[in-house]
Image 1 (cartoon, rainbow over the protein chains, first blue to last red):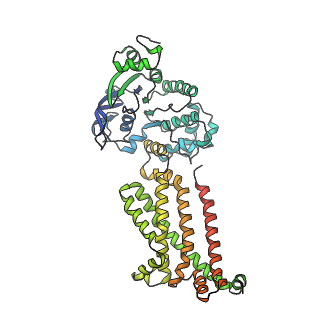
Image 2 (image 1 turned 45 degrees about the vertical axis):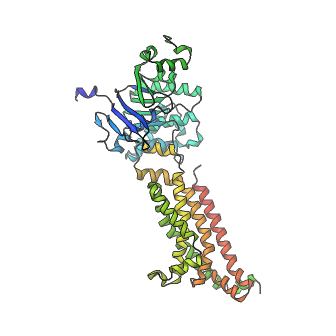
Image 3 (image 1 turned 120 degrees about the vertical axis):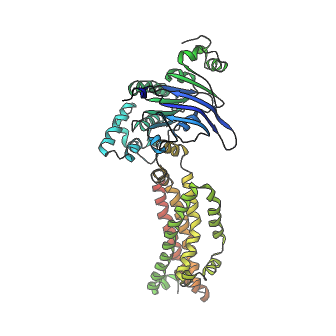
Length: 257
Length: 210
């Protein structure tokens, strides 16, 4: 094995821009390195370019400038289908296939990757347990599940083919606060065990500080700062301070919780 | 003589004309499905084709049926036989609901579901066959249902160009000023339309996503 490969960032964005046909700049000159096994949180308000950044990484969108590397290789050189199958993708609306059972939802990528049926079945059971669901629900349909259960299935589906990278776009945003806290705690547990490279989008500072190994603050398509938790709590950029103040007293000046 | 006596006396002919009617409608709907669904898929993929395709289908829809039969008369192979002519005309009329419902059904699939599918690495073909078409199937069948019911009615006019079907009785009854004969054509046609409506409606509900 090449010892250098371990230091290579899992994902690297170099001067990436994204401009709409209308001429509006959504992302301007964004550069980021995301290390293996790290959870990088993209924090920012709506329209700051967080979701666009995620969609550029799995090539749901193509950058209008700059370069994105996954595993050291420019994603324009990747087969786009291969690229996406090695990146798990979880979105706020979950997007489970309503006409498939939970088992088929989770097992879809393994199935199109031609895994044997018995192995898919095992994998589905394993994943359901992993995300804290009763394996009995495998035969149910998404409509029969609660919002929190559906999002757990969404995470299980993203993990199905064991991708090294996970992109999560406000996955817990539409879930009630109690369940959200549970899911966040479970995510930390899961991440401790699996050590995936995660890019996590949120506008919730609390969530960012809880889950992120580093936090990238974005505003109007630009990266304002990228900090560790402690660094974020100590940083003096006006926007960081504004965020801390907006989220209450425990985050105010020097107010480490 | 009332309509029931007439139908009983001429039951062999009633059956024959009904079968002709079923044949005209069945073949034309089948052709419209084979052409219309791929066209609907095509315009869902290339939105630039949307206007020309739906526009043409719309224009065809506005041509009065007798005129359409007349337009098609000089066509080489088609114009040689009345039933071919009728089937072509009925197919053209059935296209609009099929193209439009296929398109609307595919576009109506929850965008989050499509995004999740793309994001997890489904190819366009897999997305279409495993996700979009199954989820659009209820709407597509609704289009087939509308097209079939319209066709059953329109097919009666095919008798005017000698294509057979239950319209034979209707035109004959009109010429003879005999209500019983008109009804002998109209009642089975109406029953056929209702049956198609009911059974395709059932299928539509079965296939609609829960």
